[in-house]
Amino acid sequence: MIRTIGPSARQRAGARRWTLLAGAGLVALALSGCTTDDLPAMLNIPDPATKQASWIYSLWQGSWVAAWTVGVIVWALILWAVVVYRKRSDDPPVQVRYNLPIEILYTVVPIFVLIPLFWFVIRDESRITDLSANPQNTVNVVGFRWNWTFNYIGENVYDVGSPAAVPTLYLPVDESVRFTLTSPDVIHSFWVPSFLFKMDMIPGKTNQFEITPTKLGTFSGHCAELCGVDHSRMLFVVKVVTRADYDQHMKDLTAKGQVGLLASGQVTDGATGKQGRTTIGGTP
Ligand SMILES: [Cu+2]
Image (cartoon, rainbow, N blue to C red; front, side, top):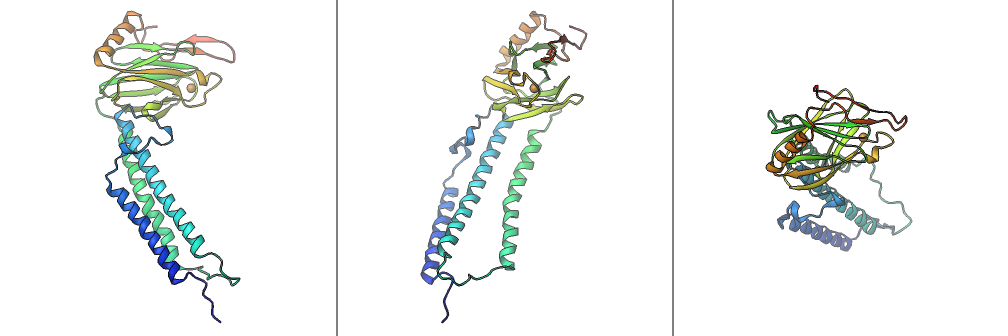
């Protein structure tokens, strides 16, 4: 007696119906005109506060949509195989080793998933790290153990913080700013979560990136590289303000005598308690 091992005609018809329904659901979702604004901020990503951050935000959401789509299809296929090909007898199931069409499918489908992902990542990475010929503002950020110095290059003023007195970085809204990142001691990382971006500051090397803040407001900043005993106290505040408020702040720093550029800051060595201050630009 010959026994069938695969699904019956009725089961195949049922599977086809579910496949059609799932496909129709995906098409309806795609045609419903959803934009990234309709999607939730996945995994608590902050609202983007710069032009570049909005590209990163879209890439993040797009990656999640792609991941969920692939995930749902894979889970559906697993469930379908479990139900339709469940054990019906003690005979061994049909063996599908060396099934060339299936193996070609295993190879081709991931390639078609990864090519768009790769394309979007390369496109966004190159425009996020792009440096313009003439940024409107330049700030040299010095990360030191354990705080920050902000040297406003064009205005020739600085501000410097300490773990006890957190400094504020002022940026004018809707103007491009280039950050040049330096460190006199160990590797730190300049991170403003609302910019959705961070970059390391490495002794002996100058890293650079540019952003254009698009939202007025106050944002938190952190060191994102474990750099020593007071790493967690390497905090700062970012205020994105109007051009008039920015100019006023530059005047305030000048009035306080914070003129010139600091190569480092108030360096505190937690291990020995030593303190020192180094300067560049001739003005202490
Ligand atoms: Cu640090």
